[in-house]
Image (cartoon, rainbow, N blue to C red; front, side):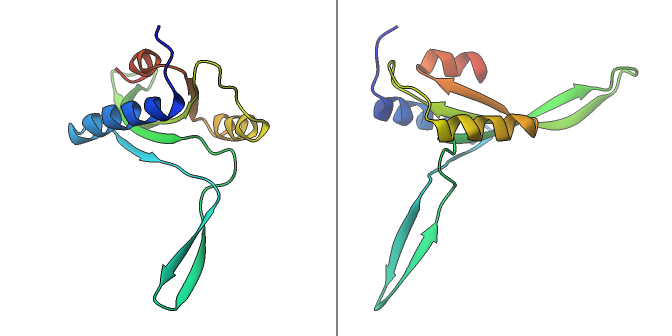
Length: 123
């Protein structure tokens, strides 16, 4: 596996997820934390983004669940959070807390170090 910078990995992942979304296979969004100031003429306003530690991407993917008894498939949505890191990148304490929070709600959370890892999760 070739080492890749986190910035370059985010560009590659964004392109792949956009391709999958265009094909109707999923919905994704890039998440940013912190806040920004928006200037509009003479006024400005501060906009709060996601909480600190939020993953880089959220992916919603349609899936079918088996009811366990009948031959019935139940439509459902798989929620996936992706945190991208360089080969040596490590999760911050805030990111660890975010991971625990979303996993407690039934979502999946993955730390991705390569495009190949992403393809295993979202083929």
